[in-house]
Length: 225
Image (cartoon, rainbow, N blue to C red; front, side):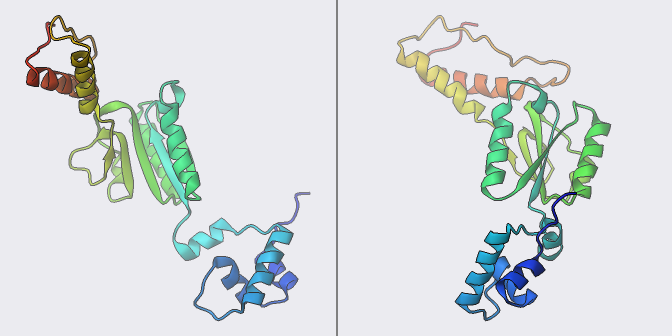
């Protein structure tokens, strides 16, 4: 049989205090007069018994589950974006939050279902991420929610976006060429062309090219092709 979970009542009994005193001591609240000795007895009893708070019960009081949903198109199944996931997990863990990672594979119906599942679990917020920088229309279920867009842009959608500074990357590339003494015979090979999924061109490629051409132009140089 699984070991019985240690409750706050067990901690109170072990510390010789009332359940209310144990509750206030364990939650760190200071709006009730508890002696330092009683507080220390409660904390020591909790450590000795291995007490862990009931997150579900606490969330009813605090209105926070300390969880974040992560919804992506294809990030989790590619070898290229592991640092994106790792960064989100590390930031969540540093703040005592748990990250739920899901992937829709580009299927809008699956995406909506996943968002519903995360919201049903009362996540505090959602990270909506894409594999490459592009314009998106987030699922309607996310409108009015606490959302951060990661590697994508959604004009008219009220949420902050975190995207790479591709413009400065292009500038840095041009500066490196110029610093090495190259002022002619410069060619750019890369993906800024239009494709069916992004008829306006790939955002990352467009921004890099813009930064590259800007710095070359300022220094009297240009792309030969």
